[in-house]
Length: 258
Image (cartoon, rainbow, N blue to C red):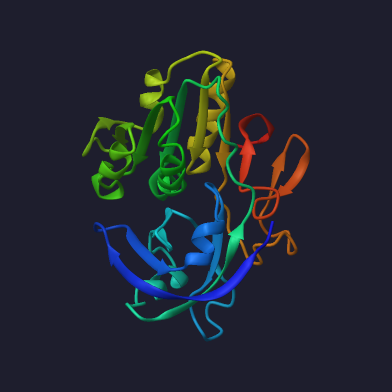
């Protein structure tokens, strides 16, 4: 798969609520190449700090633009919030293994996302807009502030449900409180992305109910190309790199350790 390194112009970069930001780049070449579940590595500074690029899932790719949903949590993402319209960013991508498209037998597509882990499902729902399957998004966050409007998902025909740890929005509790909404049967496909405890719960639920699915793993990355091995995770097939062998893996092959 061809990887593109280029500099792209910032169209907009603004908060969508008190927690998350949305970055929009003029990146026609990248928008044409990216597939749901892939990510990019962004050089957020021209200096030595931070030294490495920062990885981001692709939130949307349309009309020659690429959108990234992110949460400022460290020095790299805080620097990124200062970028303004007209600034240029050095971007490497698309990177990684994308989601597998659901086959014709799939009648129920279930996205399960936690926090900013919901990001790759927006692009996926764009691509699957014409798929005849029923689509459901189960979205979890710590508080109402850690969720955002899902109207864009709804416009793609995705039914959505929200759970928050403190009950400030939607159902009180972890997103696992919503698992009862998942249609059971061989015609259901699960796609998950979020914190590891959530992913482990999704894996266990799928195993108990004979469901198949995929998970996009989140991990600290340096090179983004599988060379440094810094993002290696355990799987039933040994250690694999999230950036090169993933970020998407089948639920069955992942190993979550307490």
